[in-house]
Length: 110
Image 1 (tube, rainbow, N blue to C red):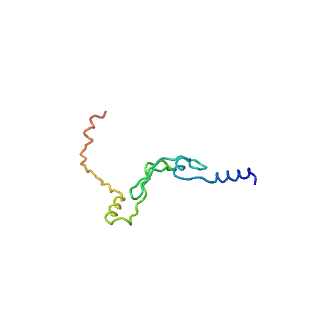
Image 2: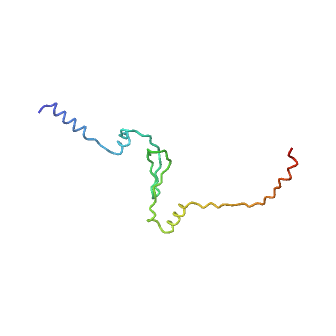
Image 3: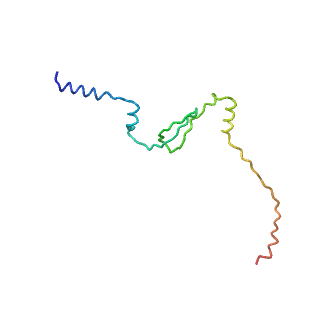
């Protein structure tokens, strides 16, 4: 057995072993072909907990995930459904008396 072939096999064996843990994920860069602009965004889960993520598509400050209405209590479900309905705007129509007489201003016309 040749010593150079032994060194070659040990080098390849050492290079194949890579310790992946949370620290290597924090230190390295994301391996992609295209690097898009990412925007810091807060993701709110249905239970109310939040996660800070990097969002790629458009700049948003916060994203809420939808709540499963079938898992809610009937009263809470009714309250949430009422909040989804559009608010009816009350139209106030003021009826006023038009007592303007334009013939009073005929004398000012030259």
